[in-house]
Length: 269
Length: 242
Image (tube, each protein chain N blue to C red):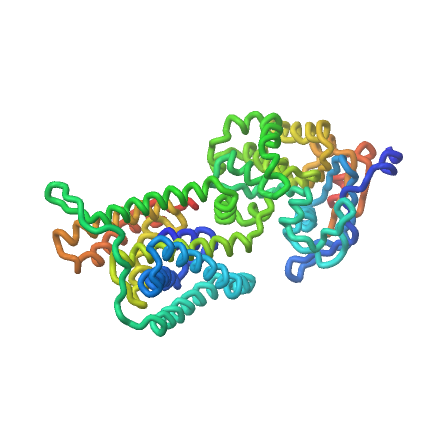
């Protein structure tokens, strides 16, 4: 979730308010293929991600790319993405109805370690996310595509000078981030329930993480997500889950007062 | 001297180029010619269009009218990434390095264009031979480099593209006399060891005049003087500034 936001913000410098619904769509598509069409888990996820990638690419080419050429494009892009998010949310509502859906967990049962019990599913989520972060890092640091994204993020004129097609990289980064976000929605859909409206809550969480970690920094997002996850666990255990959001915001304010640039702020992709 | 130019092939031929920033006309029918393999210096006062001319050639700033031919092909309307692929490398005054990447990553990105990707190894070798200092710093993050080092990196990144024409904007600006020497020493090596054509834009006359074979003067957006370098002195050039 947060990583998708980070990629888009890091490369295009625009905050994507349509982000939540994109994650929800990823989850819904997977649910659709899994339970309605009856494909296996892995094919469903792959098809959903491919759809999300091309959806992102088409959305970018047809709408955002022309917007980027207008004056004041930052503002119009942000508002456009917000509107697009609301539209998609309601389309999802029409198509799938308001009832709660969820994606079955990957593994049943739990691991017992003394007093604590951890679901195998949660462990698999952690492993998947860790693998994903490693792969993302390899992609960013070791491939021409990843290096081009970083180059555009760090110095747009420099990127042009070495012969990078900026618009093409924008489009691919946007499509890639859409797929990553859709993937995060799938993972969230196995852990929590899904409704067409849940995207806003997810996006808000993602937003907290991204700002806390430092806008545009992938490493910062990982640290921030870790801090928020630990906090959630402890607060739920000792104070009850209704205190999670207030305490997140207290931490958020304190860290931003001490480090306005975020944990790893000032660094780019 | 003139016989040499009669037989040399034209690498770059700029004819009557106009260019604007908004309403402001920066280039007025600017024309200039480069022969293959020569080093040419373009002098002129600040703010009279020297850098703009380089940006127009490399496709980063548009030319409104006029023609730019590179190796016989018209490139005035070609995109910047295509121009890099054709073999023109622009080395901006602002350097435009990628600040959070290492020296090596910056260099590799210099070879981003399709033609250069296969030659990363040999080009790296050449660049490190030219600036051994950069090889020592190859894992350092670009933002931590000194002014001289970043200038060397900018020139090297340009060379990594496998270019046959280098457009170097103010290579000496903001450098100490020693680093200036290193940078111009490297350009001299490029001149002697390769057949790369070099166009240097400078405000400071000394170093570039020593190196150049021909000199152009640009003032108020127009190229108004062309001379063989031996036939003009520093004082004459500087007099023309005012």
